[in-house]
Image (tube, rainbow, N blue to C red; front, side, top):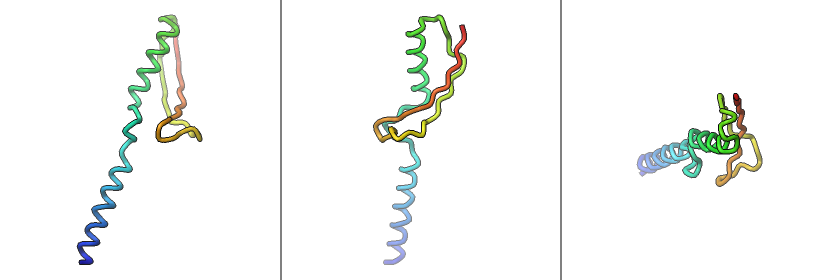
Length: 79
């Protein structure tokens, strides 16, 4: 019986660790966020400026929840 219980707890720990290490299912991939920012930027500036570099990092914010994420975005645009 103790071996079975130990095996059960070990399996449960592995399952929990793999589930916790995966990204949140509601969080879009970084490429999708960059694409959305690029589309909105292009629509706002109508081709007058072009994004040459974009860095996206999760912000250390108290507003971050499971349903809402805040990012720091660094943009370099050229004419």
